[in-house]
Every structure is written in C-alpha cells, then in structure tokens.
Image 1 (spheres, rainbow, N blue to C red):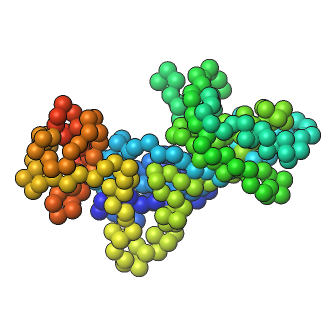
Image 2: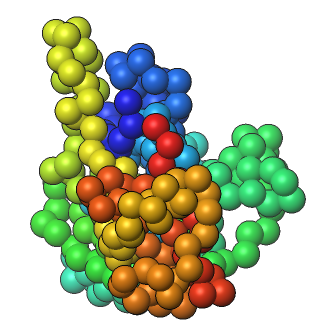
Length: 295
C-alpha cells in the first residue's frame, strides 16, 4: 500500500507511537510522519505509508495552523503546562491589553527555539540537553506569523488561532506574549489545524481505522494519493516514451517536452494515462528526476 493518511493525533500519544499503530493497521513496515507533534498536542498529523515515505525529505514548505490555549501568571521549564513550575506572577492586565500584546507578534519576527525541542546544537537535540539539566544559548530564527487572532476565552484560558511559517514554536510565542505582559504565560493545550495542505476535515482517528481493519475493510481506500501533498507544483504530462525513460531515472530533454518548463522549477510528472511518476526538476535544459514513486 502506498499513500498518505492524515491522523487527528490524540493527546498523550507521541507521533512515533501513532506511526507504530499505523504499521499494524496497514501491514506496512515503511511508515513516517511529517512534522512532529508533542504528546500534549492534538490535531493534523500527515503520515506517509509504503512508497510514499520516499517523499518525506522532499515535502514543500507549507504554512501551519494552530489553535492554542494559555494561562497567564506562571512559567514552566518546558513553556507548557506539562513542565516544572519556574515562576508565578501577579496578573493585573485587562483582556484588551492581552489582545494588544498578542497582535504585536503578527508579521515577521525573531524567535528563539525552546530548550525542550528537537533542534540540534552541537550534534545533540536540545531536549536531550534540557533533560540533563544543561541549558545552552540558542540562536534566534526568523519566522512569520501570518494570522494571529484572539478568540473568546475558555474560562480562565486565553485562546488564539495562529497561521505561521514552518519552524514556529507556539509554546515560545505564548511565552513571549507572557514576557511582553510581564505576567508570564504557559500553553495549556495545542491543536494543529493545518499542515502540509491538509486540515482537520481530512483527518481520521486511530480507533476508527483499527475498527475498519478488524472488520476486514480494504484499507487502501483510506489513503490519499501521494501527489496530493505536492499540489503547489505544476502538473507536467510527458509522452509514453518519456515516461519510460523518466521511470528508469533518465533525464528528459526540455525542448522535447510539449509543455514549456521553467528554469529550476519542480513539477509533478505524469504519464499520458495519468499515472503519477514522481517529481522532476529542470536543470541545465533537462528535466531531471528529483524523486520517483516506486510502489
């Protein structure tokens, strides 16, 4: 089986554990997820099955969407509610002041990755260093907050909707909001609403998939075509002879392809009968194989 399945990851489960469950459900050894979600987080987790895993390192950059809740007046070492308490502060700000602070983070900003993250420094993951009690200096990185809306509160918890660039840490964003207010802030829940061009509406839950497997259903029907994650790349159909050459790893002469192709552009390459062959990239007047779909 080859394809993509989007899982609405349940809280408390690691992304690795989701892949482990899916290996059993689909009977496939090759399973890999795109974009790790912490155990606390829920929501969109795209997972590649079978031959689709070959494309994990070629995924285009997509904006990501999140809905998060946070509380003011405290800080933790992990920047979320699961961490150890590192400070408590009085909260004297109004909801309008909170809204103003939130909106100030829209646009391109510099963000420092949290210590409890998978970022590598000196060959070691930051979370490994943090668990050993070691804190190191981290370089700030430019990210873009494209949308940041404050929603109605959920009791004492503030709620925000975020659309952001790849590499954004919502925990750090909330921590920075708390610093700006002078009250501290910790994330209490996180749901990823959008990733790799997929939304919650595209997601399945693990229990329903397991029940379908037990009922003897054809599990292939739950998989989306692998090319769905590359829809931002232009579709390019080649001749039958060119299809055979491309599938064998051969480069195609750009001048012999009916459709004009752009310099250094990436394409979804298809045979005349509509079969997705893989990704191709223009280089030196040739369409070269970037990644083949081999089921």
